[in-house]
Image (cartoon, rainbow, N blue to C red):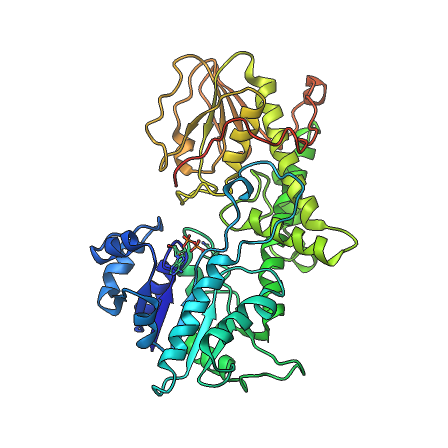
Length: 465
Ligand SMILES: NC(=O)c1ccc[n+]([C@@H]2O[C@H](COP(=O)([O-])OP(=O)(O)OC[C@H]3O[C@@H](n4cnc5c(N)ncnc54)[C@H](O)[C@@H]3O)[C@@H](O)[C@H]2O)c1
């Protein structure tokens, strides 16, 4: 099949490679010309294990275009994966200020208008074109905004030589190709007219089924545009809720002598019938990454707009900050004049992404309290100079490299993952989530929520990703 891919960044490029690996001709376009030049030289910008080799295996089917029009002229299917950003202050690496915010839809709207114009220009060339929108949008955006803007730009109604499917992916950074080719299910939001009848007479669904049938045999779930927008964001925000709960178990056990969160969570995971899956049920750092924190904030905006009786998304965001503040409390409690080193900056192991990283959120909270943490990451900042004197080390990203880290006499190691099993003599290890005798009397300082006014960072800890 001939497939255009508009927006070939962290998500788009690995997915475009996956399509080419499956034998499709991909016509990629990105308005960042340096990115395209790099791809043309064979350089792979997104940090994804295995991606350079995968790209090499299918380079002859990857074609780079100079414009959206070029890409669309040659294609029947048009994936669009451009950003729907929040301002950096609201990406989840700073405390939440209690205000729900929608995604900024200006980039995706402008891009779809350009796609629409190109489709209108090439109408009548015998191709039926399907736009598959991947970018994350809040419920109602396709119906109220993006669908009408695109239709106006095409100049023809949906169903007349073109259609538009809302097709968000459930993909994790560092496993993009694998997740794209082995999804739990595929969401197909298809257009409906006012009477609830399918306006494109089912063509968008049929065409997308054929496309995905060439990639895998996972379930395809057709629904309305708005339902697909709901599923995408409810899925991501529910994961945040699970992490919040698992971290509550961690804090609970940390305060209870004789309790380990690993035992409690491992047993809860046996309840597969009623508690669903075992994933995201380990205590550790807060949920993060380029999507999840922002998705909570966008859904909080939707909840406010619709006047929901309880804004769970707002609570999840506050909970995420409160639990990270609790980790900052533990660090400060142990500091005793020593430097603080955060081991890990990426939002999870296996990626170089710091957007929405709970490690950076923790660093920002510490900075607001006057503690200047030293930051290390085996990929992002591997050459950090470590203190020569004894220090407090906190494992903020679960990189396996830290299992072999050389701690020295007088150091304290705080481990929210409980991944460090042994330390040399003279090093104190504090696994979070394992209640030790006497811990409750050790005098924890308050875990009070950071207020909106305190939430304004004086200095930003932002690492290039
Ligand atoms: N990264 C993920 O794992 C993931 C998962 C699910 C959904 N999403 C969603 O997918 C969208 C893209 O995410 P991403 O992480 O790939 O972002 P990204 O910033 O890494 O990539 C987007 C690319 O689009 C390009 N772009 C911007 N405007 C353009 C235009 N008019 N024409 C062509 N290219 C343009 C940018 O230069 C960039 O390379 C977002 O809405 C995001 O929320 C991302």
